[in-house]
Length: 424
Image (tube, rainbow, N blue to C red; front, top):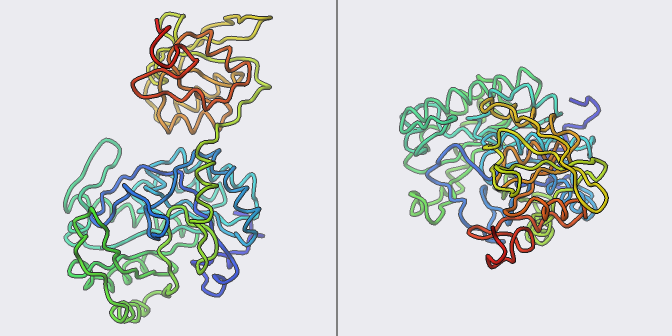
């Protein structure tokens, strides 16, 4: 962590700064590993302010482009955060790539992440290395019997836990996360969402427990009843009751009393959120293609028979590597892909093996591999059709947005006429 950073510029952690220091949330984490019974991430309203809502989801490179426009228009931004719309550590590749890019571009910014912490413990060492200064962890229960009423399931890798088992696994990960973050010098705020009749009697237990873990502050938040959830008809806690809970919890931890329950694309001062105003910037950024490294001479291709781009990135056991030669193209060599397994490390090894390639043409690619390869400068471009047409487009610097596959059809001009004519 940069010792020159002024940690008091975080408006959520320091009430005295919220009138002149702003924040921006970069919505790069769409997936979630926890099904909270009060959460609905399926729709967006520009007039609605609650976690899980965003007008668009960005890739890491798109997020940095959007951030540049935000900072130019709102110079009071002091904190860059990732808070969804899912959970940052259910999207670790996108989250870490975004943090890395922001730290390189804006070394003076505070970096913040808001999470349920289920997927955080294995990544504890990554955060201080990237200069993350603040983390918010949502802890709604410190007893599995209570948590079982708040979480339908928790997904840990390929294993899905339900009921009290889900709450118990989550609780242990939260303990490891908070104690691990504090051991690494990172400031930790805990959010506790109060659900009447479920955990409202339990808030002081939460405060006592997370204080014992070393948390720095507690934010007692009232439930926002949301359509499409099992708690849609539960009444929101009245302000007087929340004030009483905060007063009791304050025996254990300082309280945040100025929370605005921010969206996953929140931007501006807490008192003057400008997410609606900046929504067009966000949506434009979501359509922006990743940059191609034209200084790299080659393009990799995932193909079964050497004529068509017709393999998913994860299916390919090798990649053809092509270069431009005169008016045509030259097959330089065929390179083996890293063996299956190994998670993100596999894609890092692939990016290293294709380090002289500006792009890799594939029929499909997951968001995690896409983030890792793009950050390394090997942009995955999805298409179906003849290799030569794809190479012609890439080496002619055609807008990579044209490569986006249309589900159930081909990309116009890249293998067919858009209506199926010309497909092999």
